[in-house]
Image 1: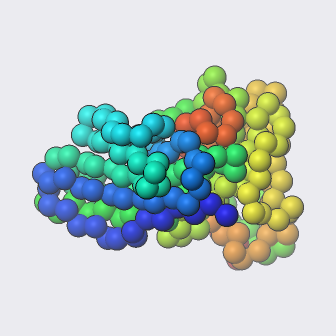
Image 2 (image 1 turned 30 degrees about the horizontal axis):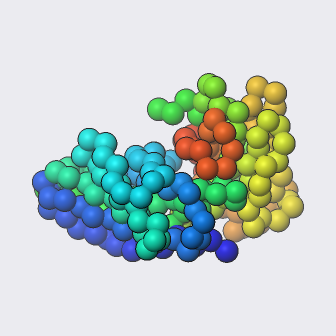
Length: 109
Length: 113
């Protein structure tokens, strides 16, 4: 059974700093990886997708993938209070997306 | 907004009843996936429909069933509701099956009493 592991947090980061969120996955054959943001009571919102080893940047967000280490991370630069949410790591496959439990991120003003 | 819509927004049922949840996919998407999210957990994959056929199923019992229509909208049916079925039910649409990027609707909050 595929597993996706995340530190549940809460992870507390000062406003303006870099928030670093991490995720490991068990299925070495996985090919697609996603980060979703979920505000309390809302549905997940796609932030980034990444398919190849290395970094992918989109605005203040950078996703990093290391397939050899089975590790995915998300960096949020210049963190804002509006970034406070739960961040879900997801791995794609024939069984749909497999999600971690999410990391609760708190940006302190 | 993703363009994925779900109805109803909230629903309260009693144990043993049956429920139908509905989802309209984003324009241009032909694949719909359903997920169950319990409080404090990540979403869990129920099943996926691609071109009106079930295209993968998670670890859910047969009382969870679904349909996809020619316009790619979808239904999730749950029979013999149990208290543990209380959760947020999420529909996600994508252009292709399996590993393609999925966009979520707002969800349906189901409470089973």
